[in-house]
Image (cartoon, rainbow, N blue to C red; front, side, top):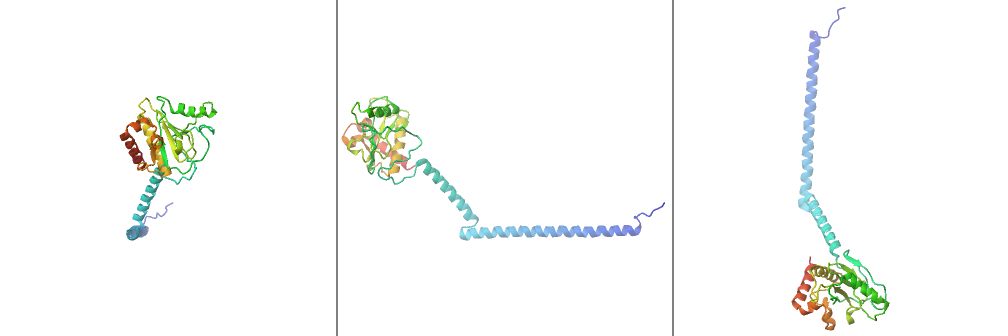
Length: 266
């Protein structure tokens, strides 16, 4: 059976009409999308311009945000520095300190001969000593202080800290407690004993560097000035030749004080 196909002249005209209609609709859609995109771009540019202008005028826009980021980074760096170097604090009479991580806390047993357990008064100076026994270690000297606790030797002797030949630091008596090291200055000072390799009493580099660092840290905590009486020798208290090398070499002593002051300013 013959059927009419839609591809006659009238149908062809109708198809062409539809094609033109859809082309116009598609062209209209493209135009509207292009206009919407242009409006969006113009709007974004306007918003960015507004915030840029606001930041320029008030410092609270884009440039202000950048400034706040920089300030936050500076604060973080400062906090890291404080954490590392322990910002100065007001230490009260008899108050003990939280010591740096490099200090090995091996506190002596409380006893009448090396750790009386008495609180100090206000700290006025750090006193530098030498052990006077060449080649001995920090651990050996600390253990000797513990041994005399028995009272058999009838000796009164100790120190708040001992620094060894490899730069190790042992805390024997907490800062804020009296140690028997500096005669009539035991109650207002903190003492540091130092090991040395030979009879000259000169500290090796490892011991010296730890001594500078620990002394500067203590000066920072107790707000002491190493160049103006905040750091002294045992010799300055009693006239004893201690620490020997710093007594016999005044220039080296002055250099040590300067090194401590320089470390505090880092």
